[in-house]
Length: 204
Image (cartoon, rainbow, N blue to C red; front, side):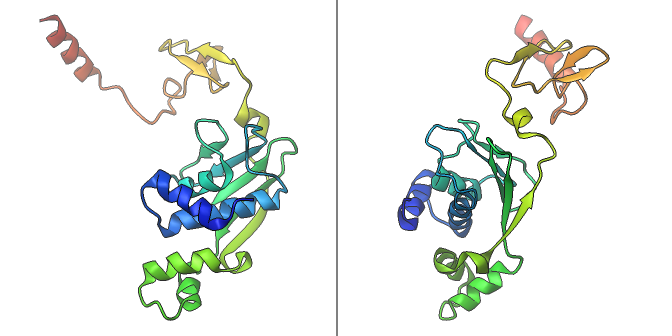
């Protein structure tokens, strides 16, 4: 397995800098792969990671595991938590790994000669033993892994807006196939007044 320093270089290169959360992502990524007795993904897609935040931590996970959003092996469930669940898509086994609750305090104690907390974390997270910086839990997914991964080529059109829905993400309601937004579970609302004004200006 690639050594820690090389993985940190990869993460720093992709993120344009190195920070404590990236280091946590790399360390937790390595621990998750090891715990499932898998290798970092090299196109097999056997490993699925569900990260509970985006940003620096997710970049660290990707550097350590080769799991990415683009390959559909890294999924973001944004709970605002530095934590990730590692799933063996063949067996369904899932392990959630998070930093210990007092990890910042432990980092400062681990590097007592560094009074600056940020730099203490930078140093400590690279060398603290796993058992001192992480918690691990066997978990069960609320959505079966085959539903999360879906199947290739699954596409339907929403019966309301007409837009295509991939990967079996449609919602069945009263005999209709709906996208999440048309079913009332979307993250946005259409500003119809702005749409009408835009059309009027375009026609004038």
